[in-house]
Image (cartoon, rainbow, N blue to C red; front, side, top):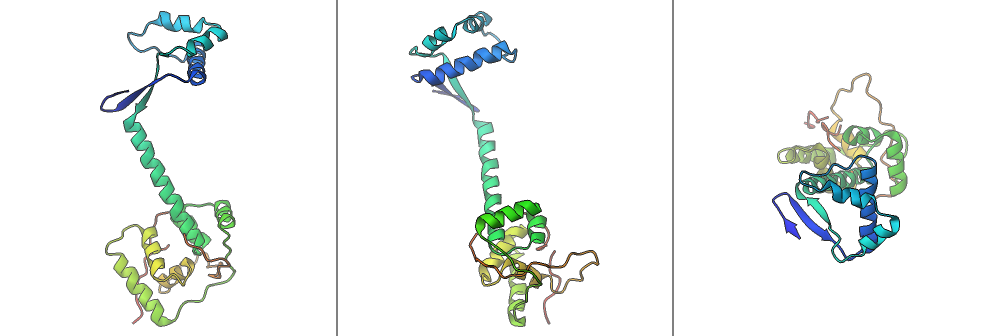
Amino acid sequence: MTTSDDSIVLPISGDPPLVGALLLRVIAQGDGGSLAPAPGTSCATLAALRALSPLETWRLSGMRKSGLALVIDTRQLAENLRALRHSNEEAALAAYFVSHGASRGMLHQLFHLSHNAITRQRRRLGVRLGQGRPPLPDPATRDAIHRRWADLGRHESDLRRRLQQLHHQFAAYPLVVLSAVLHEFDTAPATAPPLRESACLTQPNTSPPHCSPPPGEPGHCRS
């Protein structure tokens, strides 16, 4: 194995089926014109490889040193791993919202989930919401929710994680109810869709998006 600042080179040997498959891949790419030899590479060697019969290619793959190596672009691999980690975190956060009673409007605005994607997620997680506007908690609890939401805003800028932390504090209430409390003082525009899904979760669960307060920052607290 050899390394450089941005790559790791791993020799490939001791696995004739793998080596044979890679050799056939090289031959196929050469035949298709998509193989571009690096500067200094012997074109005659590649031409000789392409001239081999399948049996000769198989015999070549069984040699102790295959002449093949796997080059790992560590910079690109690190970037891919970061993207995968972010994708997994997003999926987990969306699943949390689905499992804990977020409405379709919340899921669409915070995670850009389509109607069908929400339906599939709910079915997979065993979650169903009833119909109708959810009842709000008592005034004292609503005031506590507003105060905690304001406190969370001082150190958490991501709206979705702020909502998740709020739900951790008020886990008895589905997210659709917490959102309704946070917006109880809002003046809804005439075009705003009504809340149609109630907070009656048939199967409470524990458990992935980004936006303005759930959907919109609450403006006031009860005096």
